[in-house]
Length: 121
Picture 1 (tube, one colour):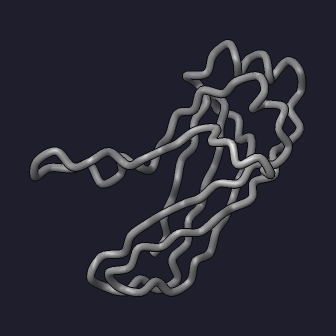
Picture 2 (picture 1 turned 90 degrees about the horizontal axis):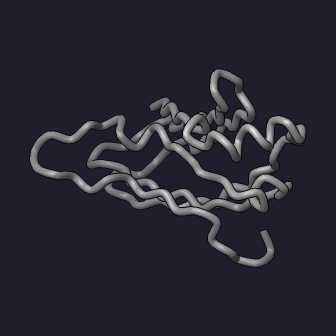
């Protein structure tokens, strides 16, 4: 958290043509290193844009899973968002304590680690 080290970056896919899957940026797969799994706290910067209409009561729910097991749940309430705005916020994540066995599974099978995002407008 204090080092400013970039551990991973996630970007929404750029639009290719007319047809774009609007939910494409709602699911993320991660590949973690052993050092990452030992961290207790991580800061993350989230950027989102708002279209030409205002968004009231904007809320983002982020859930991190391994296989079918929920590891951590985050609930962010942004409130009102101004039309045609680009917004940036920083979240401080506190990680759950993982057992040694679970950490080994996460490292051996990283394709099964993912996060889903639900946006409530």
